[in-house]
Image (cartoon, rainbow, N blue to C red; front, side, top):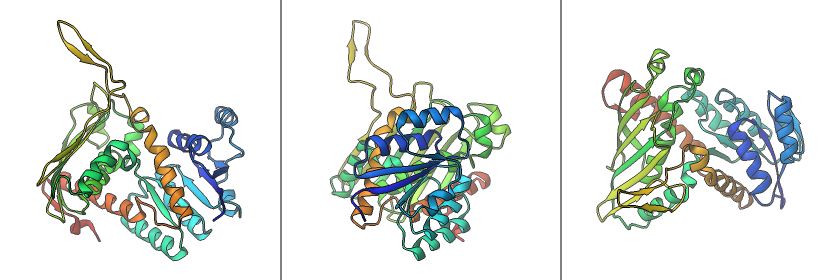
Length: 340
């Protein structure tokens, strides 16, 4: 591959813009050539001009047919991911795709077969693996510092619910929100989930329940290596974006706590205070988005298989589907029950 990897981006929404800015500002030896979005309005045109985007178009097919483009970043809506990955694979262009690949197992498997057949590299955007705190937890586990992992605990709480219109099409909390936590649990346990028992309730906003979803959930996981996992989620933590990970093992424990917005502590006769934690994911995980893209392009340059892979994307959806079934049937569900 040439020194500079030529890239096209599909999707210039909130996440797409993060990737575009990182490509232009923070990822070396990569050249952004085209950005495609179905909704190119004056506001997006102005943003693209201000950022220095070379070309802004509405037809993504121009990216697939451009012989100069080596790789494609897919940051469009979930329902377009499968088609765009397949089109990119057939065009022999490597792919970084935002999670999830899709919500249906059959379509994911068909797509992964095409990716393998065409010989392209596929990475799925589970950016939390690239957070420096969670990387350090993973290093402590991998090096044996805490012995054999026995319990993985993950707290992931949003500060406020997304719009109801979004929840209607999100696929539900286990697909939309907990998908990151399924991935983090597998990453830290270094093992696959074999069983999940999920429970949930509507404790934040009754309207969320009216459209068929829940806003508060807890899941217990069993891993192939014998470890257990505990995940808790809520759509509303009034104090901010609560993100914590703990791995307990036979020789010790490693924990990643919330990052404060600064290191200042206030001491008075009445109390000791620290400032609030970050309010949302753009503050908490911004650095990880650049790091994951650097990892993707490093893999392309060195002809290595990137992770998280398409198989990781498939496994995370499997766990999500098992969790949905567990919640509906109020019982533990083995992954083998939904892996069909």
